[in-house]
Amino acid sequence: IMQMKSYDVTHIFVTFESEKAQREVLDALKVARLALLLNKTDVHSNNPGFLFRDKYLLHVSEPCEPSTIRWRDLNSKFLNRSFQQLCTYSVTFIIIGIAAFIVRACILGEIPFLGPFIITIMNQTVPPFITFLLSFEAHITEGSFQASHYFKLCIFRWVNTVLVMTVVDPFTDNLQKGKLVARVCALYFSEILLIPVLNYMDISGTLNRHFWGPRAANQKQMRMHFQGSEFYLADVYTGMSKILFLCFWYASIFPAAYFLTAFTLMVHYFSYKFAILRTYRVGPKLGSKLASIGRCYIFPVAVLFLFVQADYNWSSFPFDNVCGEIQNYLVLFKLHLLVNSNGNYIFCFAIVILFKTLPRMSQILTSDRIALSMQTRRKTRRTFRRFIF
Image (cartoon, rainbow, N blue to C red; front, side, top):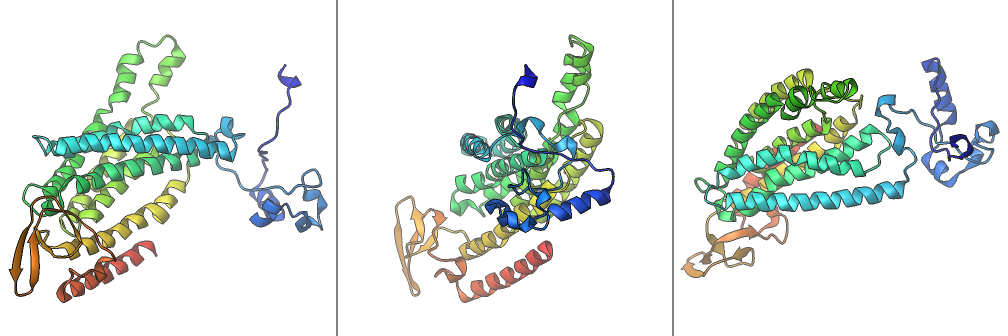
């Protein structure tokens, strides 16, 4: 019955005996992307045998490692894959909203310092649900799967770790004792304590080896339980980028974040090294795709937020309740008008400063603050160039 069915060809894999032969074929059949899209067969006018069925150009490229190819998804169409990713991204944003609501309830509750520990726990427990969503996506290679996993986890952890606390806390609580800065410090300590403990405990691997493995129905199932915990490289990359983004976001008002970030990354390095060498199973050979995504996109965006957030924070000092009589503040409570020699000011509880332009053009900046902000911006730009180039 299987021989009577016809199958459409989607990909053809060719093996060579030598690296030289592979390079010669790739150089001979290589054509421009525009020629492929327009099917310009005249590029092979001197060698008509290079055409597929004498009328189609071949898209020839060097394939990935055999262990990274998802063979069952090779025939998936681009539109289907795009629609699947759109659906999974929508569900991911819903999960982010639910997580933000839980963190907000903890921070505004009776035990506000419980919030950072809840954030750390959710950063470890929610990613398995996001990984489950990826089972509904079709990817041709394991690298594409890990890249999609990387972006989803990165969005969730950046929002859950950094942006939620910024939105929940009132604007004037940034420098108040026991408020935002204290919670950021508590978040660092929770990352230092909980992540290594969870890596060393290896709850899922321990259950597989000591509970499910001895109770397996046959030898094959028992061996599967002893392979080790499943390991996703995107999980480790997003954990590192999350800590860096937390540092860059609050560094201008909490300079100790640089030292805490260095110590946190060192602790995470040793804990993940132990987990990778001792408990995690061997994964496919992904190559450098995730590293290039982080180097070219994720970390430059984090550095961009460093000097943008520094501009806004420096222009907002000292985060007090004194507002100029300009339409730059959202006010919650009753206003009291104060008059002095410099103009009119109002007492208010501000949540967000709304700039019509960039902070360097804002009216609330004095000449001293402009000079300090420009000096900080120049130093940050030099650091950004060194980081990229």
